[in-house]
Length: 408
Image 1: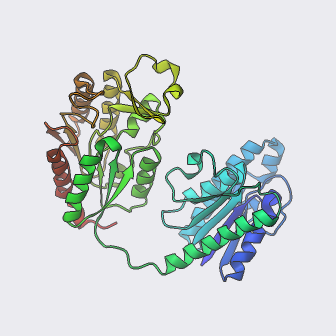
Image 2: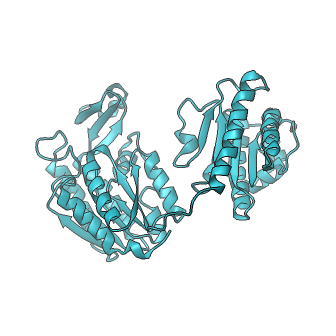
Image 3: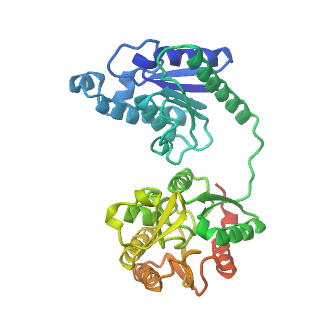
């Protein structure tokens, strides 16, 4: 077993060396990567900073001449990710450990995100108690708050770093003892609170048919995680019924999964059934955090921390056109299934987001955009998305794509 340790050895070398020594004492092979740029390393690296920056297309000398720390950190993050992925592909990496403040966390997390799901990834960070999504995105990084700054070894930092090192040893041991993986075809599904009845019923139908279903909460990070695992080849099929993150990306909500949402399955040729779940809403935090430019729009308070905004006909048309464009490029079979009775639990008669005009704009844009793409089958159902008949139809459409014949 080999653990890659990443750090800026000019500022965090002693602390990373402390972790290295704990791992070595437990019989774990280590590879130390130096991602520092300005000062001299305080412990010896197995892979020096020169290799890291060459991978990023630059050099230590060039970065010193520029003299900008931000530029150096960006290059180190890019180079470290490339070096670690190269080592992993060569079979030399079983786990990754990193530590640091803003720079160290940026570099370490970047390298960790380059590796597949399931590879142990431990990051000790001074930023772990704040907004962590930029570091984790959709990856399975174990982020541990350092409590005190990582500035020397003392009774607190020794305890935190020792706990982190031994946690990594435990992860490696558990991974080595893991049972044989389930051989059922693995299906990814997306769900939101307002589409839960639909996705739960569809999941149960698929599981009864012999599939294993992993459900991702469509909160931005959930969509990113699913897309990443699809890219890694983990899924036999995708049941993407809740594509609400596209609305946040287009309109400016807080739960966007980024511009690549909906792309991975099509690029990989993975069979997919897609719908328009919760595209009636854009997500924000508490009401006072909603940008002023949206004043006068229709809102619904999901709770005191979540404010939902109804998408307009124009926004729905733009989302539908974008979805059609993406799905039209898919290399594998695609089914688009439309719930003509409403796209969420809030978009039915008597509920606050019921808006037939906006829904019609969404459906019309999808019809028009998919008309010239024979690889996408369009199914229109009269029910709302949470109607049991719609969920059953979605599950049957996926089974018709034969995920049981594919293995991740």
